[in-house]
Structure formats: C-alpha cells, structure tokens
Image (cartoon, rainbow, N blue to C red; front, top):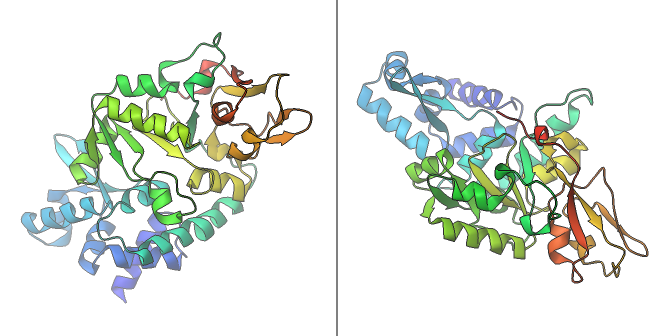
Length: 329
C-alpha cells in the first residue's frame, strides 16, 4: 500500500495525480526502492542518505540508476550536486523514453499519457490561462526573405556553430507515437543538453558537420525545427505534425500558446500554380487552395516547410514579429 502511494505521489509531482497510465509507467521504470528515493527529491546525495537511512554508496548507486533512466537530473548547488525530478511532464517524457529498458508496453503507456491524460489536463485549463510556450519554431533559413534580419538564435547553422559540443538522440515522440516513417535519430542536443545525454549514455556525440547533415536531412523530410522558447536553448528538435507532442497538444487542445511561432510568416507569390505541395506539407494545416495557395496568418507558425517543397519557388518567409518576440531568458 505504501509503495502504491509513492507511485501516486510521483504522478502528482508530474501534474497528473489521477493518471493510471503514468502510475504504470513509474512501476515499469522504478523498483519500489528507486521510487521511494525519487519521492525524496530534490536533494544532494548526503541529504538523501540522511533521509533514507541508507549509506552514501547505496544512495549513489540508486541515483545513478535513476539518472540513466531519465528520472533524475543533476545541477550544481553550493559546491555539491543536487538531484531533482524533471521540471514537468514534457521533460520527463522526453528523458525517460530514451531508457534502454523501454518496451513496446512502455511506449504505448506514454502514448496514452500524452494523448489522453496530459492532453485532457491541458484542454481543461481555462482560456484565460496562458503559460509560457514550451517550444519555439526555428525557420528554415533558405526560405527567409533576403531583406529580413536573421538573429543568431533563430538559425540552426549558427546555433550549432556557436555550441561547445553537439550530440544526437532518438526523437522521443516518434519512439512512442510511431505515426510516420520520418527519421528517428535526429533530435540534436547542444551545450548542456549534449553534456546531459552523453553523460547518461543515451546520446551520440557528433561533429558540427554531422549535425548540419541531420538538419538538411530533416528539411528534406519536411520536418520542422524547434528549440526551447528562450534566448539560448539546449536542443534542436526536428518535428513532424503527426508525432510531435507540441503540435499534437496544440491541435487537440486548441491552445496555440503551447508552441511559439517564429518571427516570420509565409507569403505566396502570384506565380503560384496551386499544385498543392505546400498544402500537404504544412504541419498545422494553415494553407488552403484557390487560384493560388492561401496562408492563414493566424495559424501559420513560420517554419518555412511550405517554401522548401514549393516546386516553383514562390513562397518566402517575411519578418512580421520583432526580436523581442523571443524571450531573452
């Protein structure tokens, strides 16, 4: 009974106290002893040893296992390492789906959590509630109107070039959703993100050229670049509309603030042949066809995927939002 309460408390810490599927995920992921330790977080190893009555060596072993499973994260504090849980269900989803012990049952449970429980929670939020966007769209650089001012942190090439180290991991969303055949190993981690996944052993260190090759492959596959919605993120995700949790949440809840658009808006030239290539490629269904393709300015995320597939090259991205659109912290 006590262990059941521990798993429910861990669900509550992730914001979904009533989720039976999330409780099942915790049970697959953690032994009762590991779950109990996770429930004591945050804390340093010494603090957790005092709380649990275990030796420091025992605590270190449990924390290492939880770290490898994507349950705990490490952060420096007063000269020591503090261990803490994921800051939200999205971070827990992304980290724990890279667990080596993940099975199809585990993937299916995560699909239920995100499609039903988390989506239901987000949908229940009053329309007056607008939290900071989880992620921000990074436009395909080649599709930007040449006169636009492109900032360093909205161009994949410069984000990668200015990074200290780069790694790649499998896309957690496509691992669990499996709704398309887009490339899986193409979630790029930079700086602290790269350090984290390499330290866990679930990320592959790559060169900057390899990262740019992945970016090019993603663009050819019609994927959308995203990063955290702040000045400097630790990842560049390459997302599809059918698997990406951000796109799915936004579509199923109707809350557009979940994903922040880029500073750009697609514009179609008069030479458009209305072939429909952009209509099929748009991940947010922001395009309709008449005599030419028509962009819904309210729905467009400014990703530039439509421009990359246009066979007559008549779609460009124009800057419509100021630099201040991107949070500075």
